Image (cartoon, rainbow, N blue to C red; front, side, top):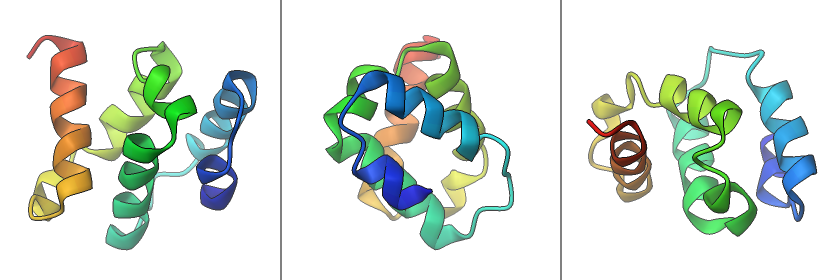
Length: 87
């Protein structure tokens, strides 16, 4: 499913994939890093980060990501979430 998100080329598809990914919450550190990398590199994800479902997914994903604060992609997504949430 993570691979599907990285290859998503449409907003509707991205929302569908996010819906599927949102069913899980036991992500490994490596998966969190990969998902954050996708958010930074895939324009379909990046452009709809403010959409409620995508925002909530990444907000929840990064709740504990500060433990991985040495990863540039994770830091970028955390900062984006903060900006969107006006924190």
